[in-house]
Image (cartoon, rainbow over all chains, first blue to last red):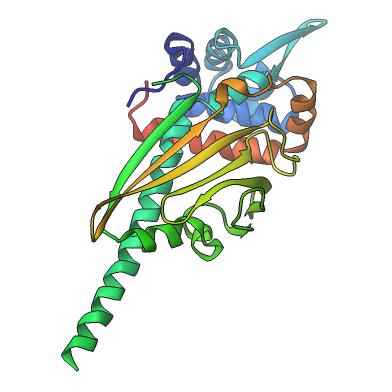
Length: 124
Length: 150
């Protein structure tokens, strides 16, 4: 089942958050509120150059915004976009698949137990 | 498929009464959904879904047709928010008997297209619930990894 969403836009969002380094960067930004590329590079096992590249991807996807303060650019997370990314239809579908699987597991184990009890009663 | 809703189903090797109990009884809901659940199983009845790491999400029972349909609205914005038509989606479970011992369980979540845009209010809540967002981001990452990335 394909999610009914603006696919191109979501693809960009997905590939932006699909990278573990970029997700770690988003987490650092969430923790700190804002950070420069230099700060981010200091907190993660990546070069400042790589951080700048990842920030550009996050910026294009609309997940972060840079604000100039004098000579430095401080980055913040854009919550609305993160909201879209985390509540994307694909994510919702995946969550329900997981929940339905759990319901199936619980219900089938109850049904098997009931069947065993029925058989034991018949044997008596 | 209508935009703004998702529909999933699964075939379960259990009779309808068992599936109904698992879907609607708090004791079981805490096994497949939240860490704890309270539920007044009648239309209009209040419900709370509590996650230890996330908080309590408010919900309201909308339809109860024993062993056939169970529907509720729940808040999607964040934990603690009171439920309104603008911050909640409708979740509907439908049960269909495949035969005496098998049940097809369908879930439809709808109303995503009617959610109010996350504006200032959402921004404030966002500040309050960064933990929850960080967790969701982590889970999103796991899912993306599982499906091999876009």
